[in-house]
Image 1 (cartoon, helix red, strand yellow):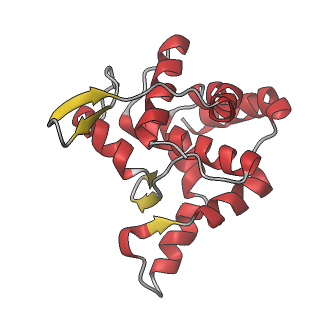
Image 2 (spheres, one colour):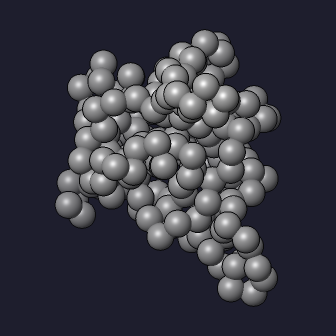
Image 3 (cartoon, one colour):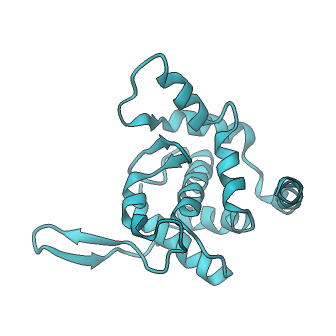
Length: 181
């Protein structure tokens, strides 16, 4: 498992190479989706912190806090860590895990082509882990509104796009966006 900020930085680096400006809202959705794909493919979490059900969908608070100063503008820096002993900020390590890099390489371009609110719409559909977490919280407490990895895995096992099917799916999703946008 990785620090979510390290994964976020890797997403931002790839977005810059692709020419895709990324806001914190975009980043949260992309981070969530690659976490789900990683869970599905490797059977273990990508990040060492959980996602929470916030009004605009799943959020990884550690990654959110690193970039919250950007509000709704594109992020143009990378997250850093803090050394509490030396009391200084430090660069976070680059992502070198081949399994994690493989998931980013296989799926990010698919999400880069989508509008922010289509990404939000995908997470808000009935039956999604975000939706189920919100619904379950109405009848039992969920401190922090944490989205269980088991819910995420179950969703991605049943509906995650196959890597070989992404070009067709991307065209359908872009057509949908043009229709509703």
